[in-house]
Length: 278
Image (cartoon, rainbow, N blue to C red; front, side, top):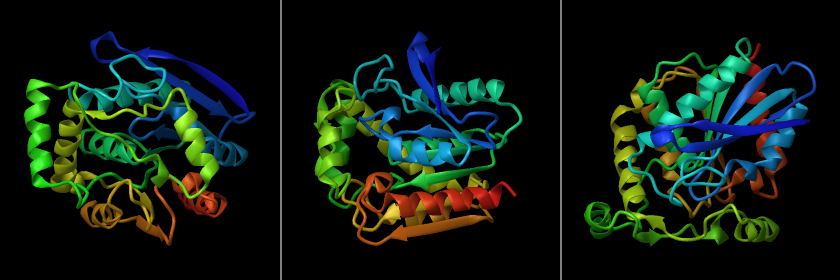
């Protein structure tokens, strides 16, 4: 496996960190990895190792305000800051690997970013994988909390509202500890502005996801407490893709690629990819 990294410039001249994991020789496909809230592109070692072993390149960026990228932690002026950077990164990878099929792989909030990106951009991709998609407002988030997020987004946009509960990412204690101890993971609270932008993006996906027509695989742990797992069913219903598959993994938590059963999950994902490469 070969590793490459660097920076590209995005909105407001922000430096966006990106990295690639490449098989030896010419890859048969490429995955553009879109990570979740408060984390970074380097947290997908199980997925990366599995895909590179299948001769598939993996390319990931750290969102603005995340990982090694510039910006106030877990903050964005507008949701389009994420999709703009993703578009620049996809173009960057296309220039490097113009002739191989490319798939998006979005996890959690990364799946929300991928969905909005696909709604807004007509782009030649071979397919998309949505993992634990954060597309539905959780039932435990009250209308009062939503209203508060909207108000604070205007008057105190960088005020923290809520944090990711690390215990819900995986049933593997080592994975939870690695998440908590990772210096590039932000364990503080999501800012009010970003929370408001996420809510607006969820409403957009609910209203406009029919614009997504790519082959799509949606994978979800049934015991996910970080996001509402019913969002996977809704997204499957909303998109217009003729080729769409929903797989629910009984008892698995949020990061299904970091669960004890991750080898089975990744085997299912790579089998789906192989079928679209024939």
